[in-house]
Image (cartoon, rainbow, N blue to C red; front, side):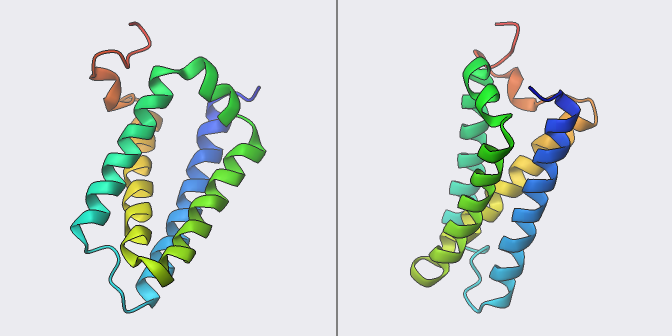
Length: 128
């Protein structure tokens, strides 16, 4: 299993790369996928929900996520879904982008030593 700093570095690079792809594709289209309220709501809410599940069940999910192939497949799936969404429902690309941005903010909090803000919620702290 990898150490925490290596995993954080890898996750940060994958999130930043995927976020850059989503931002570039969304910006280069005329659809304005980032301005739809549904995109912001689903993206931020979805990212917080996924993070809460990882905090609630760390022993199962973190071991799986630590595998490089799983993390890479996750980033590829997000980027691929965003590209497909452009032709069908552009605001989904916006939601993915908002979600990646939210995850990046949480990751910055952890890297800077503030910890994950979601651990303040009942049932999500490692000490519960």
